[in-house]
Amino acid sequence: MAKAEVAVQHHSAEELAQVLSFYDFTHPLKAHTRLYGGYSGSNYRVEDTDGRVFVLKLCHSYSDEDVEAVASLMAHVRAQGVHCACAALPRSDGDGHTLSTADGTPCCLLTWVEGKPADKVMATGVVAEKVLREIGRGLGMIHSVSAGKEGQFRTYMQGGACDVRKHISDEYAAALASSADVEGHDFLPFYEAQATQLRIAMSTAELPEGVLHGDPFLDNVLVDGVDGSLAGFVDFEDACVGPLLFDVACCACACCFRQSDNALDIRRLRALMEGYSTVRPLAEAERRHFVAFMKLSMLCNCAWRFKQFNIDHREISECRDAHRELQERVLSLEDDICISAVEGVLSRLPKE
Image (cartoon, rainbow, N blue to C red):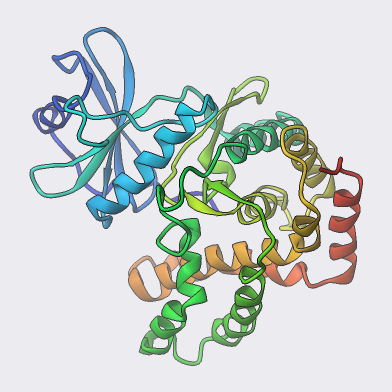
């Protein structure tokens, strides 16, 4: 399912210029274009008088603290020398990376990444395995960044990683139980059974931790439109510190199922994991729990879609069944043949 083409609200050039005055941005504002994306923000391509291009991101339904937490992680990744991810830029006054618009919406200024969404490029005929090998390598680079000092950055239990904390804590289950709109829905018993497995897997102690993108789907990765080479990861709203396996397993499940039949493509998985392993080989514990994390990461995304379109935004009736695509992926990963195929790919990868 492609990301909805939504812009939450429009802002005038004057409003944008006021925000940009807090950053290293040469005024006056030369040009601005509204970009389209999901429900979480309004994004603008902005160009200053010197011809430099940035993205101004206005984050709806997020607190100032949440936006600063994400921005500081993005800046940390860039400071560690990783350039395959967009970065948040600091305010000119040195007071963090974020500020609020006149209406109280938190925002931040990001580096511009020139490229096209990976899913759209693959749809044009660029070899999927080449794109996925590049994505794997880039994700491995992000995962090679230090997680900083203890308490320096938010963890998955504070936010990000597709709200996995809400499934660990039963917050999400309580939201389902309190909604008359989904009473008796066939998603409920599926979710209850899978959430139990999620809590068990997330309690695994020996998994390496680091910086997570948190939502590494194809539409959050930009690549060259001709040869598929990696331009950079974008949309870091779910960034946090947590088990690296969450990110790489999520990427595998998000990117390696074919659009045509929603079946796991082992050639894609092999390419993704070979690219990843050239930078960061999996730990033995990560290999053992890989399938479980593929399932739980997809459950988080599946559950988000279900609640978004069956409870929070029921008016978008054409998306009521958007969760079923990911639900099918979770269930397919319980098939012995599918599990063996995944384990076969992992067994051929270089070890630590």
